[in-house]
Image (tube, rainbow, N blue to C red; front, side, top):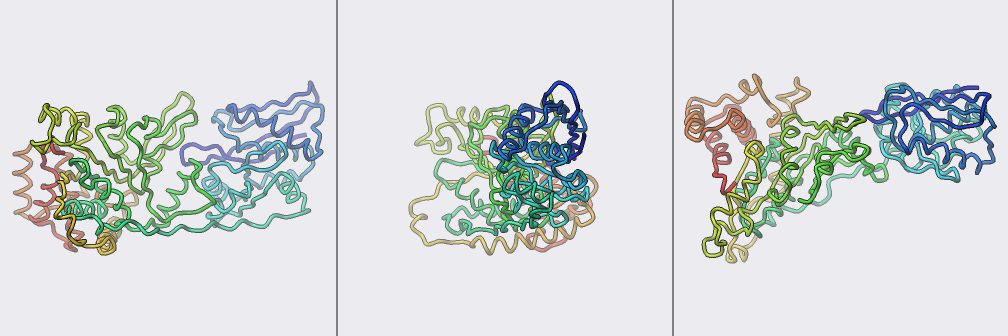
Length: 504
C-alpha cells in the first residue's frame, strides 16, 4: 500500500514543493522517515503515532517508510507532521488518496491530535496556488494563508477535522483573511524642538531611501528623530506588503494573520550578534535586516556594535539581499531597507564641548568613530551633526512642519519615482538607480556639474560618493517638483556628504 501527500520546504522566502511518499509494506515493523529530515522531522513519527492512537487508529505491524522528495533538499521544521500523517492515512485507506494528493498540507501535531501553528503559511499558500492545489493548515494559520486569493485555504483545528473533511463527513469552510493593520498614530516630527536641518535630512531620506547617519552629543534628539521617520514614509504597496509579510511569516511574527501596511521599524541592540542581524542560527532564519525589508533599520550607538557585525552590512546595503551560508544550505533573503544610524562623537559624548570633553579629546573622537570602517561610512548618503538644544529653545512653542505635511511631499516625490522607473521592476527609489540610467535621470546643469567636479577633486570623492551625491540631488529635485538638476540641489547634496570624520 502506498500514497502521496504534498507539503513545502523553505528555501529563503521561497517555499519549494515536497512530495511525501508513504509506503506500508510487509517486513520487520518500523517507521522510517528518509529524505534529509532534520531532528524535528524525524521526531514526527512519535507525534503521529501518539496522535493516531488518541483517535483510536492503530498502525499495522508492518514496515512504514516515508520518503520526502526531492531527497537532496534539506527538510526542516515540525510542519511536516500533518502531511506525513495524511499520507499515512491515505496509504492505510482511511481517507481517499486522490483527494489528499490535490492538497498541500503543513502543521504540527500534538500528542492528542490537535494542530499547532507553524511559520511559513503565507509562502506555502503561494506555492499551493502556483501548483493549482488547495492548502490545509492549522486554524490559527488560516487567516494568514487566506491572503493569497488564488489559493483555496482550509484550516483545521485538529487531525479529526482534517479526516472528516477528506472523508466528506464534515467539509471545512475556506478560511478568511485576517485584518489589515493600517498605520497607527506615529510620533509627530513637530514634537522635536529645533533641529530643522536634521528634519530636512529625514525628509530626503524618506523620499529617496537614502541611508542616514546622525552624530552628536547625548540628549540632542537623535533617537527621537529616527523614530519619527516611518511616519514620513508612504504606506506599503500591495506587493511590498506581501514581501514583508512573507519574511515575517517565516520568522513566526505574523500574529493572527494580520497583514500590515505599516513599514517595518527594527531597532537591534548594539550587543546583537551577526546571526541576529544578518540572519542565521540553526535553521538560517531571517535576521533584523530582512525583517526591516521595505522599512527602516535603526542602529543606535553605531560604534558600539562589533566591527565584524557592522562590516557585514556593506554588501546587503548595495545588493538589497543577504545570503546566509551554512554547511547544509545557502539561503537568500531580501533586505532592501533604509539604514538610519546614530552615534555619539566620542566615548564620553562631549568631544565638541571643550569645557566638558575628557582629557583624551580630540583623539578619543577619532578612535571612537574609527570603529566604523571607511567603506561602511561611504555608504551613508546623508551625514550630519545634531547639535545640542538650549534650554531657552526648549521653552519655545513647537515649530516647523508636522509629519503629515512632510509626508505629503514625500508621497509626491515617491510617486514621481514610481512613474519614472515603471519599466525597471528592480528599481523603486532613487537610491536603487545605477549605471547608465543614473546618467540619464541625474545629469546636472552646467553650473551644478562644475560645482560637483570641483568638490570631487578637492575633497577626493570616491566614485561611489560621486554617484550618491547625484542620487540625493535627484531626490531633492523630486521634492521640489523639478525635472532638471540645478546647482542648489548639487550644493545641498554635497553639504550632507562633505563632513569630517570627527563629526560624522
